[in-house]
Image 1 (tube, one colour):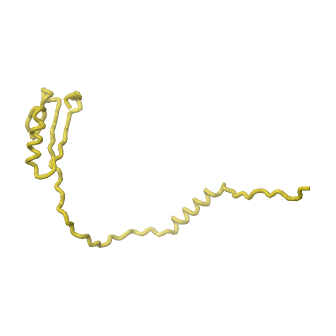
Image 2: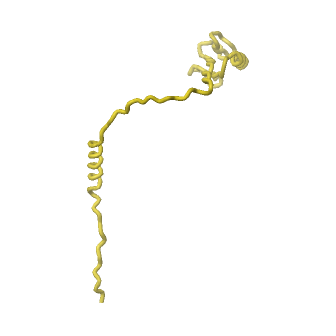
Image 3: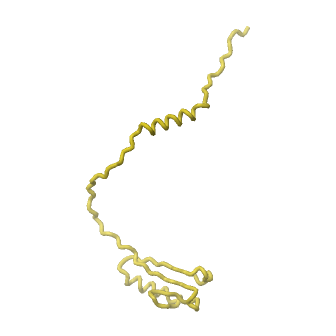
Length: 114
């Protein structure tokens, strides 16, 4: 004869968990004091290395209005696109530090010109 009673498993109602978590969050936010952090004087050590020089900009403009698509503006003068590498190299050797080349190209130019 089987006299043991079957036990039902314990269940935890989860329907109100979201409400309880939200109320705890609101309570925490309401009771926490918001303070402004005041700036503090910090003794920063002196730099041991020299400041790095900012790159020397070389700007090249290639515009559709030049007429000939093999030309560009470089240092306010019209130059041949084929001569640009040697001109850039010459300006790079004259620059006091690193060189950065910027291209400003008209959107109307064909891809092969760019």
